[in-house]
Image (tube, rainbow, N blue to C red; front, side, top):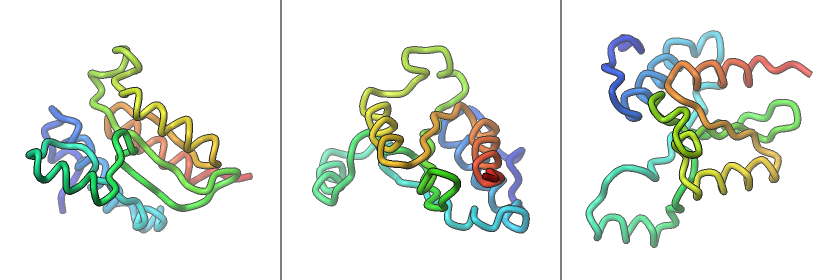
Length: 133
């Protein structure tokens, strides 16, 4: 079984892999995590592939992780995951497009959180899933 500790946490990608491995290990406690989905909007692509994704509907700045499980006033939770080293930098590492999506989602009744590192994202998911009215 791959554990979060298996990853060298030197990239945003490695933090996301650590988070998803933690989710897999905690499905018994939080079965809703099976619905956590990654939107592969980021990453480096050649021009042809990038153009194709744009035609298919990929939008700049869309959050990395989507959990369409309602809690309280929210229809679901979306997370933009950043490397911990981005905390304290301009916009805590978020682009204007990412901040725009966050504002749009919150105004539309979704939870949105900019998280720094897998543990911050894990804590956000736990807090969200354990939300009791």
